[in-house]
Length: 201
Ligand SMILES: Nc1nc2c(ncn2[C@@H]2O[C@H](COP(=O)(O)OP(=O)(O)OP(=O)(O)O)[C@@H](O)[C@H]2O)c(=O)[nH]1
Ligand SMILES: [Mg+2]
Image 1 (cartoon, protein in one colour):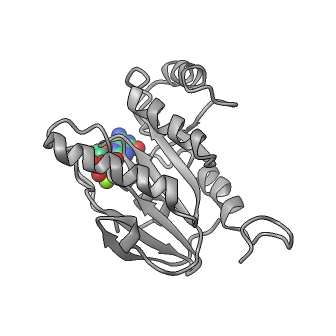
Image 2: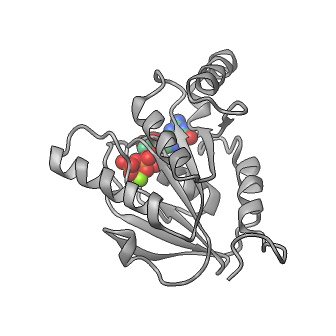
């Protein structure tokens, strides 16, 4: 997929207040600080999404309209300890609500940090996605921060712990590693469905 055009279309607290357009949505989910917003900026080739070295930057659901035909959705990060328990529970509910009830959601890109032990929060997200029958694609962020051997070991661990059919894709917003492959994977989702395929209408 080539991103010719992108703009921030909506910033909302709940997906129910999100854009009404029928375009498919691809959501980016992961723990706070894993690099969702930074990866989106790398894919866009422009710093549209606000990022921070402190966790808890993105607290709303942000919709980016790509090529006037597809939304990339930047979700609030989960697992950020330094917010009130009530707000954390609220985020979990909002993400769960979005994932379980948004018809236009076609794919969830699940971002995981290869530098830390497999997170139960990431396991929870994948369990939710599997329960709802959602398509997902796992990527390891910040690949520039690990040596090749450590990255390969993390990929095997995550594949095993998260019961993935293949090793997660390594990406880096800093070096650009994996971003072309990721866009290639997303293109399959955004391509118009053939007649008779699901998702028509
Ligand atoms: N070295 C390196 N740092 C990265 C990379 N991607 C993100 N970061 C850093 O990680 C920190 C968090 O990035 P964000 O994109 O704000 O993370 P987020 O997942 O959107 O976080 P929340 O909005 O809190 O959920 C920032 O300091 C980024 O510069 C990467 O590929 N390589
Ligand atoms: Mg963010």
